[in-house]
Amino acid sequence: MDEEEYSWKYANLRVLKSVQDFIKKESTSTTAVYPINVPDDLLYQVLKLQGPHNVDQLISHIFKLGLTFWSEKLYNDVFGSEQRLEEFIELVKRRNIKSES
Image (cartoon, rainbow, N blue to C red; front, side):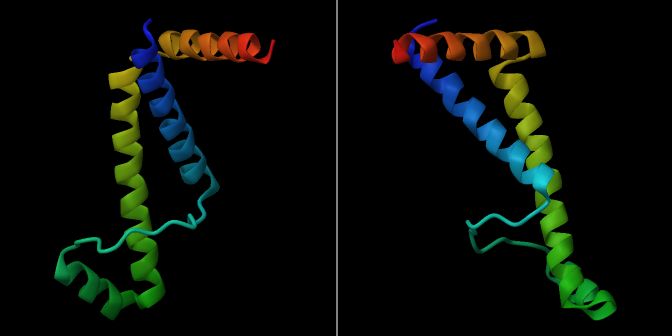
């Protein structure tokens, strides 16, 4: 594996780990990106029927579902299998040990 491929896979591994942590903790991140485009009637009807807190929860839930699907595709595109992911993690560990020596 050349250095460019290693760097690309390592960056994607960090992204996947970040997504995994975000989804597991079920907390909000300190980073926010606006605007998010959503169907007008979705917000209006949920707000009308369930209140503003539920609108925020719904948008967060939809985002996390999309993030989950996106990260699964990224995982498959970059690593393809658990075995290939584990092999790459072992490579990262070996490189870290070498650099510490």
